[in-house]
Image (cartoon, rainbow, N blue to C red):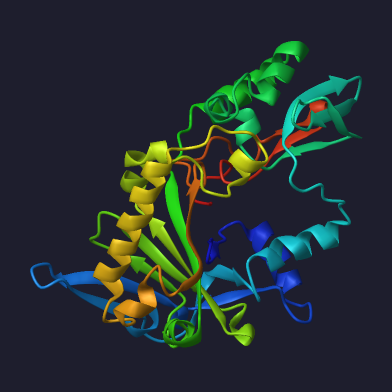
Length: 331
């Protein structure tokens, strides 16, 4: 669903530079030719124009410099980072209880929260959810780190959690689908990979996934506007979301999901037909997978909660990371 990512932190850029030395490289700078902007030029006639970013940039460089993409897919980046760290991942797990036992962090999870996940010297919280008050609405009960802070009576940790919980996120609804045959060929023929849509109340971005093109399969992901996602909060987190499937979050309204999917497919027809593909190649009937809705509830925080200096609590061997952390002028 995430077609690319922007890097402004020099240390992160240095890590990506190391990954680019691997063969084959799991990450590379995104070419400006793969980025496009879509704007409505005549509302009455529903005419839309797609312009390549490369066409409006004079001279070098020929890439977006701070925008990167995973190859052959975005999971390749995280996979390479995990492999380089020698970490042992435990996927499909919700951490429901965090405790401090002497100088060790003890994590529990599972459906009831009583399964021991491990004992760790250092705790890195890469997702804001266990530290954010939104946990209550998502999973119910007190956020795991909030409980830990109360038990520890640690003023600095409590303040950090207050700072994180004060930041609201701008949600996005994503509609994921895949095509094969003539429809796949039509989408694969587009010169762009990511198209940012302007002037539409429903659709904000369209991305084309080509990592399975060798098998004749092309994916298309639609991103909603933030306002549209807020309007349809009752749609829940998605038909196969980890929040509902693994974490036990309350399921959304099926009627609301149907309405979201239909509205986003209508927006795709409005914006991309016939300028991108023919109508039959942008339809539910043509999709061999989906369209399936997913909700990214906290993917886009409205501002940073902590600076990198404030993100580490040294005496607890605890560090916060992720989208809620940024220094001045960096993301």
